[in-house]
Length: 289
Image 1 (cartoon, helix red, strand yellow):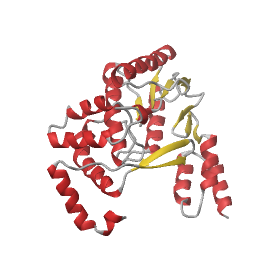
Image 2: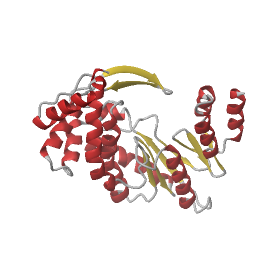
Image 3: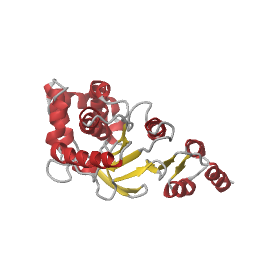
Image 4: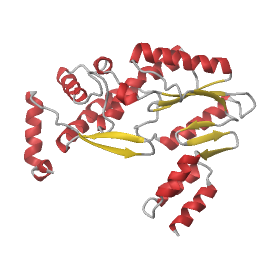
């Protein structure tokens, strides 16, 4: 609040710190949310969030053209609904409209944000950023938070989602260009690869886990990796995709009804439309009276 009370003076002072190389990141405010599982959020002060936004303004135009089309987290005109719809299209194409078996290798990275290696991340950034001062600033902001020395990004930072996409672009490139997977879709650390062969789908997951471990110092969550057919249901981003419908995961539906208010009803009804959830739509409307 102090920064906002003297906004113009503080903006000029911050600019001077940045140009002279004496800027220092402040400590984070820490709090916990349950959405639905418990997450620890680290929130930067206003002046640091201004710097984070400036960083995004500079580096996003550099990296955005490099990303694959089917990366859907924290990107313009993407998001959860678009990712689920795209996977539904992929399932239809891979199965030739459900006339061939299709297997989904569904993967999730264990403690992703807590496991991002700073040295690897900075190396990836330096491939495409040539300005020394920008790299120095990125180094400082990245180093402002650690889970263990040299490892981890805070969930609350504006920069973290973009940096996460830059980090996992290496995974996308490996899957698309080395494993030659035609149907691959990723939303942050949650991704699906499709194959018409069960053994191949299992092998894809194993090879991805090996790549993550060797190249990015990450690992797949052992309890969140599976291979299923489309007819068994592909669980992705709170929805379960089946040949005849897309339904909300029961835990997602329960949480939606509990949180429905008159202020957010339009968003929730939109989710019902995306997920073929007429019964859930009635529950939401009944809850609101």
